[in-house]
Image (cartoon, rainbow over all chains, first blue to last red; front, side):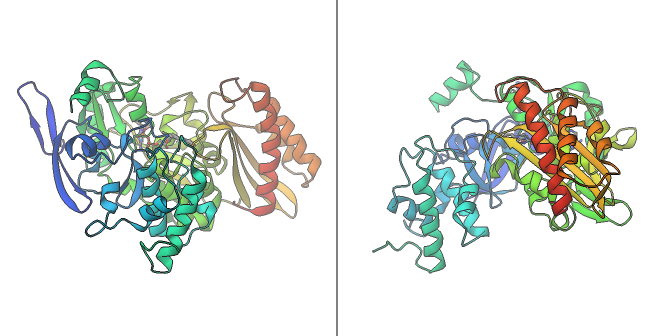
Length: 178
Length: 302
Ligand SMILES: Cc1cc2nc3c(=O)[nH]c(=O)nc-3n(C[C@H](O)[C@H](O)[C@H](O)COP(=O)(O)OP(=O)(O)OC[C@H]3O[C@@H](n4cnc5c(N)ncnc54)[C@H](O)[C@@H]3O)c2cc1C
């Protein structure tokens, strides 16, 4: 039978060795099969930028990029992500302390209210811009449809993503306006 | 970490019960594991239905058998003389982005596009949507309308049956616990158009209140063949046969489509729930049947 590399402790509990590339770094964790990716990121790797909200795939606050695609890390088993690449909000900060153009645009346009949905929003937007560098407003709205904002700050979020796209197109990444 | 332990031990807060985990590399191996472990073992595809049920402890499997290493199940292809093949492990976004579907049955890609949200479409699979067998599921109506067949592989061999005969009730299908749904085949056909119209309470992340799929063959404005499939208005997706019969052999007209809509509304068996009343659903069936027929007739596979 096929299993992953596992260790069984004296109580008969099996733990699996999971190799991940998180924000470019190789990380190995040893977890039970029922461990969710969101808990590995937050509890094992201290990457608490990834938030837990509904934990049922509805709210999107736990969004991370799995091989470049946004997924809800509350619905992915860590063992299922073995060998895959993950990007969390912490991974968007570039060399030194430079923020990602999306993060800059969110700050500039007051697209952060309570902030709980922000990491997920930004990662959904990041995946969109990677695929479609000049999206329409409709495409932005669709890309963040799985990220709920309880402050209902959607207008500024959409504005921020549009501005970030424009700045990236014009090659002015993190520059401020005006 | 203290807080984490508190939640783990104190409450059930969204942690999964324990289970054993297998990730075999072939369908045969997966079936053997399932047969060996008995009814307590479950197949894991994207997990967007199963893990939620496990978090609520509605299902507590002893073991999960993951399909992630079975690469062949993730293909979309076309085989001459057989048809268009969707591997069971294709995600909804694989359908949304498939060039083959865009060329032949855009209606299927569009149906997938209307599902859930982007994050869920990146992990939720075709096989999971069918085997989970929720009456409001979005893929069954359009696939049944296009005459799709499903292949089930078990330890004793393989069988193929029309998707229409797959569902037996809410959450229930003919699949055995040690069988794996490997592929969906949309056979070559003479249909000239097909579409799926979903009515949900929001544009994203909402299940269908009613879903109607239609596939038609129209030659010189005369309907030669029609299949209408209704979702979310009966324990399983259902064909609206009385409506189909009314259409066949007749020239397209507004009155004809309206009559088909009334017949479909009469045939369905909706319930009232949190999303809509039975009366509302029934009238929606009338309206959406008419609209989906019109779209399939006028615009092709959209
Ligand atoms: C927020 C949210 C929104 C959603 N919106 C929609 C929507 O709009 N429309 C809709 O139709 N659905 C929706 N769903 C439901 C779900 O995402 C889909 O049904 C999805 O297709 C399930 O696929 P999965 O791969 O995640 O299945 P899993 O959860 O992995 O499996 C579901 C069931 O099928 C079995 N199974 C899976 N694959 C196979 C196989 N190949 N052979 C045998 N058994 C198998 C599993 O054992 C399990 O019992 C939504 C879910 C969430 C969480």
